Length: 422
Image (cartoon, rainbow, N blue to C red):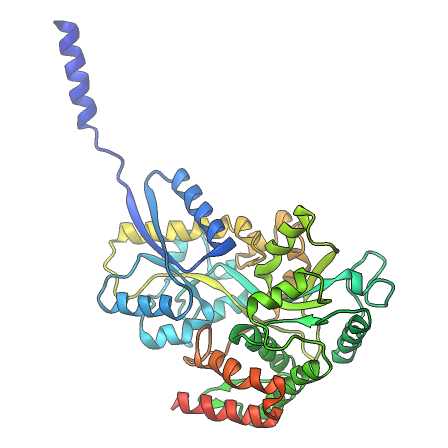
């Protein structure tokens, strides 16, 4: 009887011990493909390591559908606790009032400071008054992929098989002409029939001239109009010379390079895993590399954007929940080396400048672009899925295929976007 009584007492004592309190963090992202796989793996790792916090993730459709969903959810106070957000959308997000401020106390709870990140990404994540509204997770840009087989025996490959000798537009076009002579179907491949691919190349050429698409409330002010026309003229010349594909949508532009029909590709770092996977399978058929887009026009810079973490406005979370959210964000930053495997450059400098990342190729080769990145204009009509991208597919893409003169196209961009700013 004493034994049974002891067992009963022990059972009662155990049931009296409260269960470990667990904060449930609702997470929204727009990450599909390889990015989605990597993020889901990071979420699983976080949940395994944090019995007191559980991330419940939902992946929504990328682009306009995602940001429309966020706007609607915030309006009724039913947004997630944390979400991924493109920094190029920051000005519109601030105008719509969908982003909460990330305070110094929040950063402290995440175990980071503003100085933990590359300055360009922090600026892009902040409002004009310097208040932070997102925490940068990466810097992703277009880079110049190259197929070494078209450059062998030329001045464009050094003794180690690295791309060299492209210091201006003339050099690059000489390399394109060489590739054409060697049988390249499209010496430089990019998505000439896609809004994103066309905009990123155009914006890089514009910014490399020191040009600005939008300054304040004016589109292509002053000599920026001529610089925009020059960028379109260059892209048109590539088409006229048969150096770039006609009306190539994104998938087709990638296929041209991976199938060996292009010597170069101007595309995002996110295609690095594609190249690595093909190489590992032995199906690529050539040796390749990737570098920062060379300084073709006088200024070393490249179009770039960042995935970031943001907290929706109009949230009703407790201080404990908010601390849990910042714990999630801080952990993701400190474990972003796994995210870098998708080709991205970590925005968190401790990882980006660490030994492990410096050994990650080709990321380490183009990582310097983090210091010279050109984010989209700080305007509500710019950024992912914006009127600026609409102008790329509706005006620039037709122009580079010969349907409008470069200056005529630049003037049309100015007119179309200026109307959106009124």
